[in-house]
Amino acid sequence: MWPILLHLFPTALYAGLGFCCWRARFAGPTPDVPRPGLARFERILLVFALCAHGLALHTDIFPGGEMRFGFSVALSLTVWLAICFYWVETLYTPLDGLRAIVLPAGALASLLPTFFPGTHVLSNDNIASPMFRVHFVIAMLAYSLFMLAALHAMLMAMATKRLHHARFSRALANLPPLLTMETLLFRLIGIAFVLLTLTLVTGIVFTESLFGTAFRFDHKTVFTTISWLLFGMLLAGRYFRGWRGRVALRWMLAGFITLMLAYIGSRFVIEVLLHR
Image (cartoon, rainbow, N blue to C red; front, side, top):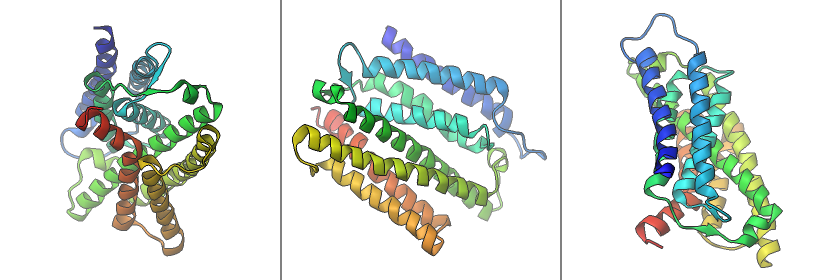
């Protein structure tokens, strides 16, 4: 019962905050004067939700003296970090529309380990390695920033579609200009790309120190490398060709989906579909 309550509490906080935000800002016709970002009580409530979600994650990842990291915990941790970055981002830029995606994602992600606890236990050799810890932290930061960038890209796609049809809801009306959002998107992608590069480098060092070889051609290495190439081409296309709009969003989502397949997608197949 206690583990279930640990997950239900942050889920309820995310859902309650999302409902309050929807009632206060998103329902009804577009207002004449856009409101600022998170209100003070919303910011405090989101901190409580993040703390509760973090506690549940710690219990899921370290259920004793071992470390478990199945697909549901990996996805939940990625979303948790993305919401942490979103919270910091709202200190500088009001992104009312993004919370309509972020908060439901947090509610689902915090509840997911309850239904799919996973049994993938990392070996003691991995946990004890300092290089593995560095690799793990950098990888999760990269995943979470790309997750936030993907949600950001989805919001931009929705706003662009509504703008072309001259239909703007209250949530989208409070967004910054699309050019500002595009600049912020590529800033997120640039930082995440650097972290993904460091993930590959630390992964090579860790693999060589543990297995005696720099490369292991498994699904994680292949999908992560493909994702790195896609994001690299996206940034190059932005810099040299001025890519933007639908072209940039398609490259962004293709790279993100490939990155998700590297670990979370493969663990989903192994744990849920193959029951291994």
